[in-house]
Length: 344
Image 1 (cartoon, rainbow, N blue to C red):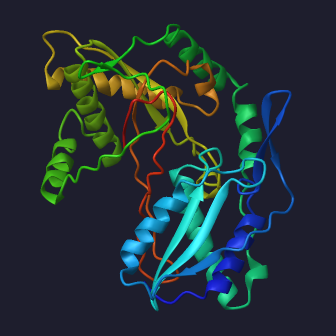
Image 2 (cartoon, rainbow, N blue to C red):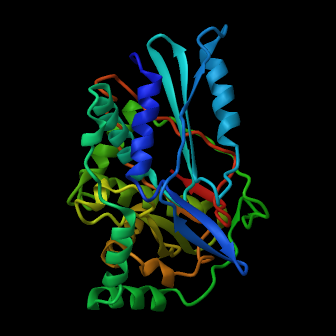
């Protein structure tokens, strides 16, 4: 909520592009093999779409956003799309769509923060003062070095030895989960304040209580998901995937790009297990994942060892130049191939 200078907004976003190798990354093909290239210059004008005269700007915006989110990227030209929708004199929606090859949820929050900083500089005619942020290629170099040190070698060996077999075909409610398409549907479930408070209260008690509330809640949601999958599939040996943010250094936390890597969690459920015994089994499994989920180590994990993913997001989007803002994720109608269920 607030007034946005559209031309200055576009200039600020262009400067973000200029200073981000991730946003200037494209993908090409040579002899049937894909490869990436960072182009030196990528010009983009963020379009202003004024729908303030519409009889129902909010409904019009919802329709246009869904349509635009389904537009496919031309990977050898650009991996993002951006537009500014004006609903009223002081109400705007910034539409930003990025291919997952160049971003993750944390990166989206960094992008929002950086654009706000550059917008403020642009308003004061000081955009040239924008500092050079850390680049994704610097992380890639550090990742390659880290994979060769003793800790990195130990991590890759751990995952190579842990999963040497393909997953069993998972059936949910009696139906096979191997999808023949990437088309998906999203079902949103509002937990509510009261239930959220009770979950946090439970996460603050032994044995779930840990070094952070987020980790405690992750233990809890992992246990709930394993119990649910066991109940609706009837299977005892279960594997779910979970992302690791891989941003261990302060500079990583300020870098645009795709850092997350998916790692598996494995659990065997016995006939006499209770929810408490499941918690006791989940906690050390999660702790092992956190220990060995080092950058690059996921290359040793078979891509088809799980079809269910738990993606625990705790990303904060602040105000934009002092104006209240909130983020909404638009479902484009497609998901990752091979993922039958994704809890987010």
